[in-house]
Length: 271
Image 1 (spheres, rainbow, N blue to C red):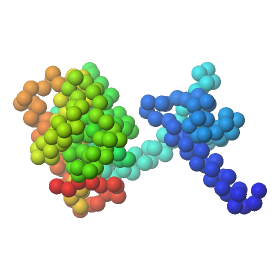
Image 2: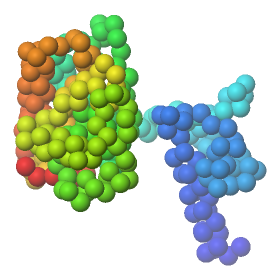
Image 3: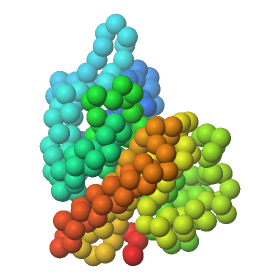
Image 4: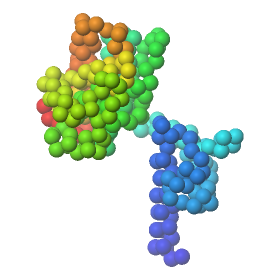
C-alpha cells in the first residue's frame, strides 16, 4: 500500500471511529457490537478491532455480563474541559445561582440553539426540592420548537427559517396542551417576541410549566437563553409574574455582561 492509499485508509478508520462514538446519546447510552457495527457501516470483525482500540485508550468501556459498550472516562475528562471552557456558561454561572436563590424550589437552566436543536448547557436545582426535574439535563438535545426554550429561540427566526424547521421537525402532541397547528404556533412566536419572554404552559410535559428569556451579545444577536421550570400547581398569577420578572432580569444581566462580546457561535435574531 503506497503512502497516499495508507493515509486514505487511516482517515477512513478515523471517520468510522468517530461514527462509533457519535452513535451514543442520552437516549442510547449502551450498545451492542452489532449496533455499533451498523452505526459505523463496518463488518463486526473490523468494528471489534476499532472498538478494542477505543477501549484501550479509555474512550469506550465494555460490560462483559451484558455484552454492552458505553462511553468511557476519557470522554468525560475531555467533556469536562469543554464544559468549563464554554464562555457563555462561565459568564452566566453566577446569574443562574442568583436566579435559583430568587425562585426557590424550582429548576433553572441555560440553553443554546445548535444544529437546529435546543441544547441545555447548564442547570441549577434546589437540593431541598423533593421533586427532581430531569427535563433540563445538561447535554440533552430537544427539537427546535420544544418547550420554553424552543418557543423563545424560534420567535427570533425569520418566517422562512421557521418554515424550514417546522418541515424538518413537525409539531407533535406531547401533552393535551401542546400546540400542533402551525398557524397557532406562529401566533405564539409573535407574542413571545412582543413580550420578550416565552411561557410554556404544560406544552412539553404534563404538570410542568416554564419561562425563558433571551440572552443577547454585543452584536445584538440572541446567543442563548435563561429559563425556569416549575410545577404548574405550585404557582399562582402573582408568583408566576415574579418568576417571569426574575428570569428576564437574569437574562438581562447575562446580556449586560456580554455587551462588549460577540460569542463565536452560530447566532440568529435581532431585537
